[in-house]
Amino acid sequence: MANSKFEYVKHFEQPDNLLPNTWVVVRIDGRGFTKFATKYAFEKPNDKRALDLMNAAARAVLADCQDITIAYGISDEYSFVFHKSTALFERRASKLVSTVVSTFTAYYIYLWSTYFPDTPLTTPLPSFDGRAVCYPSVQNLRDYMSWRQVDCHINNLYNTTFWALIQLGGTRAADKNEILFSRFSINYNNEPEMYKKGSVVFRDYELVEPGTHNVAQEIEGIVEPVQQSKTQTEKDKKRRSKARIVVEHLDIVGDDFWDRRPWLLS
Ligand code: ATP
Ligand code: ATP
Ligand code: MG
Ligand code: MG
Ligand code: MG
Ligand code: MG
Ligand code: MG
Image 1 (cartoon, rainbow, N blue to C red):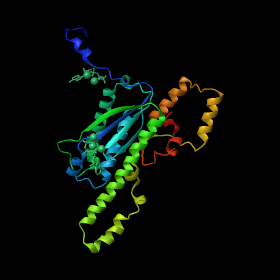
Image 2: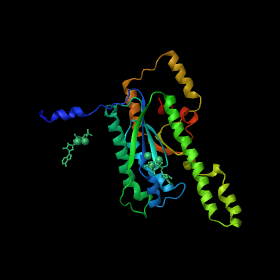
Image 3: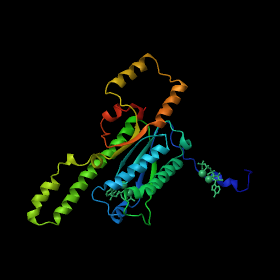
Image 4: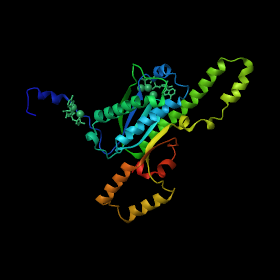
């Protein structure tokens, strides 16, 4: 395009490239979902349909973007982790955030009727905000993921107790014992894993048996640095693109999840 006298306005754009070689987390969160949950009569404290819909939209985002290695969701929020090597949009924050937010929102609305077949969406339509944060080390990233999962646990414990109390409040004394027993003292361990642990979305490969991989890796590291051939890298890329994207409800605070899936953080 030929230069015009108007082109100088381009220089008003500020660079917002994120720090290289850091894990980029884009976290999105539903706007005004307390009200939204009331409007669509979400079951309290956990509406399974709403969580399944969040998970389906997150899965679509991962399918759309190979550079996202893992995502974690609770309530009305989702965190998407871009691999530290990503060069997508030259790592420009506004591009990354806006693409994740709009892709997620588009799928959330597109898939709504699958999860809420009897409740059509009406305006105001759901929307999400988003931000990007860089984490320089795997430990920082692991701590971020742990922070979100611990939050899930604390909130769920609080909410489960809160809603049991609400139910308890509106009952006669004679029923209280019965409810205390059947609801309140529900063994918290028997609550669905999705409510207690949130949802982890990632590409599924063969699991590494505990112990075996680390030893092999250490030996490789000592003997010689593994230089992957280009064809091997291409093969890995192809394999990655074909892998099934799964939604699981697992502990991500401990080491086991990560040790058994070394491709996520390497
Ligand atoms: P903001 O726009 O600032 O994010 P918000 O109302 O969305 O405001 P959050 O802190 O994000 O506030 O809280 C999310 C709200 O949505 C909570 O009230 C939560 O109970 C509700 N919510 C989200 N998902 C579900 C669900 N699956 N079942 C029941 N309630 C849900
Ligand atoms: P990027 O993802 O980098 O934005 P892009 O393909 O969207 O890539 P743009 O520079 O945004 O590139 O250009 C938008 C493209 O969409 C142009 O090719 C433009 O001709 C086409 N396009 C957009 N709106 C219309 C329209 N209403 N009618 C015909 N073509 C359109
Ligand atoms: Mg918010
Ligand atoms: Mg919200
Ligand atoms: Mg929230
Ligand atoms: Mg354009
Ligand atoms: Mg465009």
